[in-house]
Image (tube, rainbow, N blue to C red; front, side, top):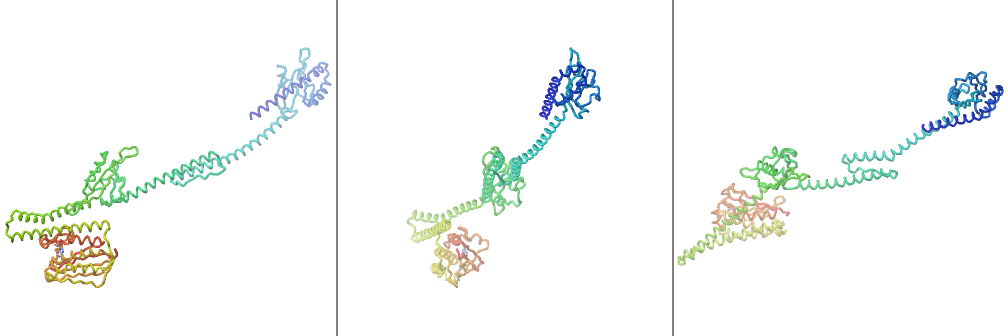
Length: 569
Ligand code: ADP
């Protein structure tokens, strides 16, 4: 618009100058004609010169009367004294006006200047030109500008569309993918196209790199979490993590089991509302105040015949700023360990006791023999016999202990040889070795073995187990009785039973019979040369074959000991 305005003003200026030049050129001629009062010629000249110069030409007297005009009859024209260009010319020597002209029925530019003679104004010459050519020129420019404007709009629309396609749409796409990423879909990627702008391509690539990096990191974190979760849940140790306010953060399955917690999903609950054991609660409260690990044995779930013992160890939990934010308590159920320890202590005490008895006897009687060399021959013979008996007893205790520990050790390291052969050989050998002892007491050993049973076993061990059972049956039977050995298949097992018609065993002893050195009647056992280890050896031989040993008994009627061993080991 500014250009248009400039153009219009330039055009007006040019036309004004043009009109002025024409007026100045024609002025002398008309001054001369007015001076000669040749009004007739003025009209003719006006028409002639005006038409030739393609200018509307008007000659006016100072009174305003029109003398000549090439476009109108001067007689019919109004007084022109008050025309603005004339008034201005009268005042300043030249006048210019742009106004609508009825004569030419359009806007026109009028230039007027006075005509002089001897210093006086004798008239005015006015040159006019219609401005419609300018309007036409301007309309043409308007038209072109409008076309240009429309073109510009169309180009802008196209450019916006193109921009949207090449810039906004990829950005939209990135936004959609970013939203997917934010929702946890780490597979989201921006599709890059060959026509994408460089910036879009770089942005898309940067986004994809972030997504890939995030995906990898999340995968690593998930894998680590799964691994930790697997370790955490498969641990046999109970683990509880609590925060500074004793709120349970994590607890594993083992802890649920060890502490016998029946409630589910207790994470988030206060420790004191979940864990009944006061000792453990106190330990956790104490551990929360410490900066270093704390360890303690704790007795939980104790009653008359059962006591569960835990070893709890705490470690401070630190947040990412290394500030203490709670404690982690790991506890092991050491009840079994404690039991083993107790058993071991009892065993050592028993062994010491069992060994001390014959040793004291041997020591005592041998010292008497040394101190009193003149003892009567009879007494000496008796003392020597006692020493001999106790040394045999000592030997059998040591032998039994050795064989027990050998069976245990070999079972543990899987060193026992198992051969698939008939059981008959082991049983007949055992009967053969015990036959004399039985005969001496008039006890008959009867074997019921309907079929030849072959299975994987260690013949020497089974023979020893049956010897031990037979020896007991002979020892604890009255004379003139029978011992029956029955061999049979039972489901997938072989069952070897040794039944006697002896004294029987009171029921309250049955569960403890297979413990080391356990005897119903210690004095009787010792008197009969027992060590208290025979049945314990039988039990371990059964265990070495992945089997069991059972007992049933009736007072004064007899006892039945059965070895039950799997046919397929
Ligand atoms: P011991 O050397 O004392 O016989 P064992 O371990 O072989 O030791 O047996 C443990 C105890 O079981 C014996 O002391 C005895 O009291 C009891 N016992 C074992 N077998 C029989 C049986 N057949 N009849 C009665 N009591 C038995």
